[in-house]
Length: 264
Image 1 (cartoon, rainbow, N blue to C red):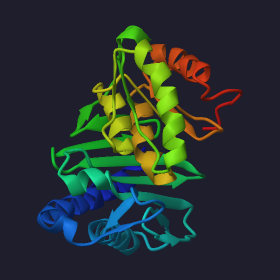
Image 2: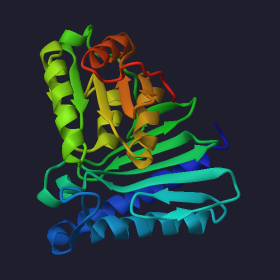
Image 3: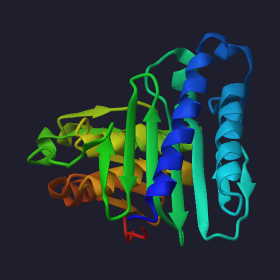
């Protein structure tokens, strides 16, 4: 773990700096809004400036690392480390003043996250994880417990920006909702995954997440003891161990994950 600690310290520093920057920009956030993949997939100058801040700080501290960011940063490196950055996970929430957004920073080696930081600046909660070394929230260790069974589980999910995909996700949700305690949709996958580790959610599933959506949060959840998988169809599932297989079976019955094997 000693060689990972400097990476974690750097990730915490840049994530918290970006979070402070985003807090400062809340008052003027609606002044510069564009869209990306669809009319509902919004991006702001705050997304871009947050990514410039994070990418610049990472390059300054570790110039030989690669960096991949949601808003277009894609630099190659020679060190074997790649940083995967979501500078503002939950842009729509940020725009509307809905209190669920975060900065997500992960460091990968050989395509696997080894360091993860998800910083919720509004609530001053910083989730951190080291591969093989555990997960924490504000320095307090996390350990998944979870509901006893799926019927009493609080389950998080999210939806695509594509209208056709959203229709399919709604059909899956109609099968899942009667089988669980309730569903939550916060709109920030990095937080959803971290909340599984914290125990605010018992489980989480979503299809179509980008690398920057899950790189840090999935490590937080898994290092807290959750089972976490990305399936071949692009669906992520994270759950307390006793809930993982029942949730996967439910999703398969709802025509999700059908005939799919885990790939990560």
